[in-house]
Amino acid sequence: MRHKPVVVGIDGSPAAEIAIKWAAVEATSLRSTLRMLHAVAAHEAASNAGEVVYRAVQLARGLAPGIEIDTHIDKGAPSTVLVKASGDAEVVVIGSRGLGLMAGALVGATGLDLAANARCPIVVVRPDLAELDGVRVVIGYDGSPAGDTALDYGIEYARRHSLAVRVVAAQPTGTELHRITEDQLREAVHKRDGHDAELIQITGHPAEHILRLSSDAGLIVLGARGRGGFAGMLIGSVSQTVLHHADCPVTIIPAAATGG
Image (cartoon, rainbow, N blue to C red):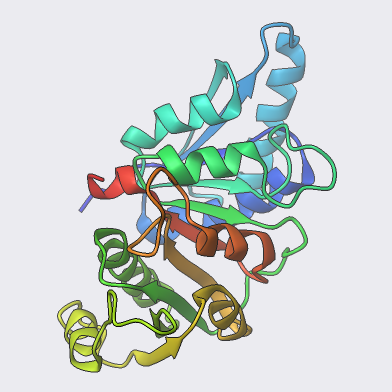
């Protein structure tokens, strides 16, 4: 099966270089095109944009010599350009810094806009995580459509990259609301052929548990806003906390990627 392109946002920053490395590995794994997008302001010199793209292509070619690459330079804000591109992408990859991010922030407006509005999974990679290691994929599950898509994505990613799977189901403290039983969790995982997955049920706010259980993870996968989200919030507090503090790349499944 021919997969859609792996899209990566580039801007010449060290964060974008790490994103390119992750995206090149993923495009190779999927046997898909690596599509590089550079969003430019109207006043940016064409030569500068061309240099950013040239260096990005050289980096990707050095990592994956046989990879198919296409490049695009579009005018507009990075989030606008990347959200548009997400409609024809397998996944969109960005660095957690760069793409116009102000100094001091860990995940800026571009990442949060993508997590809220992209029409495919997005991956946020921290620039200090140069080595792509880890032995498992950790998936947050709550029975919501985004949680189901997170399971699909996480189990398939783990299969392609020969990683173990750990599924974490959260139960809010002091309530039976949205409770996921052990049988429901096991059925959800097994029907996706995740028979060897480790299943963990936790009580309380999920973010700190997910972070703790991800100390040896190569990837965390979450829905942008599942059953615990507040009306009007496009990306929930759990996803935001994990994005800001995870020690590995994080995949977010936006509501728009599940028809939400």
